[in-house]
Length: 345
Image (cartoon, rainbow, N blue to C red; front, side, top):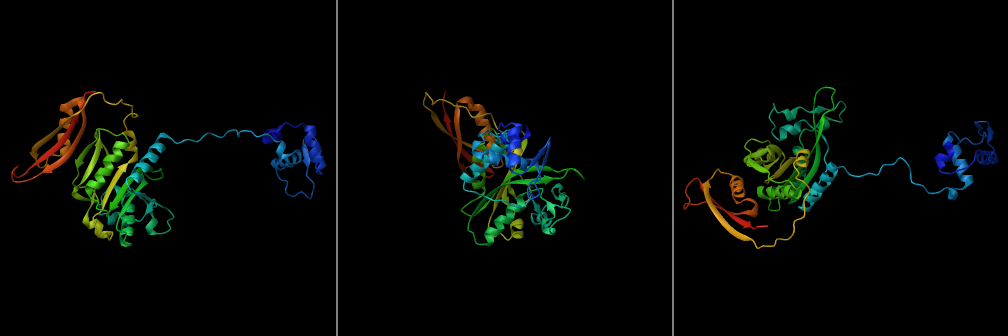
């Protein structure tokens, strides 16, 4: 019975015994005596193989293997795959770095001595000090790659990595393993707004709507005042900005570099519902330009929120196209100009 199930055939006991006896095997009841010269027979699967080769492999019917599940990507894996496709389409190359790093990496990004990110999982049998702890942030790994490219005279490097970080939970307890999406770039006329545009397009393609952006003053290892945090309903999705000159000096990078660091789990949770089909509009659109004078420190996104709230559902598109500063406006003031597209559906 086992042999028939194993091979997918239907032979009687007598037929199997006849095949084995023709090969000098002896069958006594349920016991099979193997000839001394057949030192390759050690398991019942070997017996089944002898029966199969005499019966004829061509006579064994083709069947679907049982017990094999059909593999498919989980929603999180599909989201991760889509994220990588979007960033590659923006011109970035994917990199893969080690999850174990040197404790000195934290010094190179000027991480404060009392920072929680310095509390790393320590490897009990490291190959050396340079690979002795599990990283709690992937930014140093990205900066190492940017530094290597810069010092090999690569004029431009636009990189990204979906990296795993490890946050300890206590002794003898498995750490939390979190996936981060890290984008790093320098050269190619890139600046803060290049990276910000990449992040905006990424969020749009991932169907993450109504997010906020806030100026960040003290994020490590970013330049103070040239860094921003992206939030959705009060939850931080990530941070992006220009790397501090002191940190660039630690890595031997002689040009401005920009990094974005986002939490994959937070991005996945911030997705809106599946995109739905909308028919082509039946009515023409109305376009208006709107210029407003405001305080210099007022974030443009706060003005955009008021415009969206005031115009309502007929607002189809809102775009900032100019920021003007000058004597005509006054000290500490700026003029921001928006283009509005409105349409009744």
